[in-house]
Image (cartoon, rainbow, N blue to C red):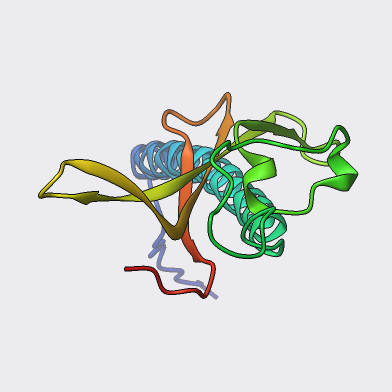
Length: 161
């Protein structure tokens, strides 16, 4: 009895297999490079996010105080603290030119600036202090190319003309 076996092998040749491995390797290298770029950018985004939250916390601390040491016009002309201790600050301008550091956020530093909005009397060219102050908070980090800056306008609630 004669057995007739046909040898119809279907599969990959060695050359096809090597080419497939090369193509997959190139794709994996590209994917790894893309993932490393995404990781670096996500770290930067996280630093910006934390810095923005830190700046917002500083801003909230400042604007939750009263407008001025004086409770009515005339407002105090000098910006800066009247008190000697940070825990005794009681009005917005006490935080003028103050440097902030956080023990929970190493690498971040902030500075707050408080200024009056000045209204110029155009006839006499005299500057008049208004019942508005701008609060500017600047937060920096060594990774950031430019600082994070947020501003707010605060009013005494008293209209002046």
